Amino acid sequence: MNPARLCWSAAALIAVVGMIWGIGMSASGNHTDAPAHAHLNLIGWVSLALYGTYYALSPAGTTRLALMQSIIAIIGTLAFAAGIAWVLHGGPHGPVAVASFIVLLGAVLFAYIVFTKPLRRSAA
Image (tube, rainbow, N blue to C red):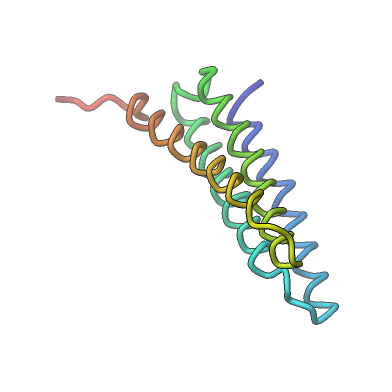
């Protein structure tokens, strides 16, 4: 499985879901879920698209670590947005707290990949 394609595919699906969710909130006049919707769009659409772009441009995009990072980021994104929505509707904070650490793990892994597998070697 190609991490760039996985990230871009997930980002595209999440963008569509986020837009539909936003239109639904607007049509109903109930914006209770706006924070969850915003996090889904930012982390899901934007971050995953950026991860996918880096993987498409970097040799790191062919590694198992990149694939693992992509899967963790997608799982974290979905769990985080769902967890925020659950809290907004009176649910417990525990699941969203766990999901936030999954999102953070994905970002830390991505940072590790960026620092260990740069896009280009410097001409030093």
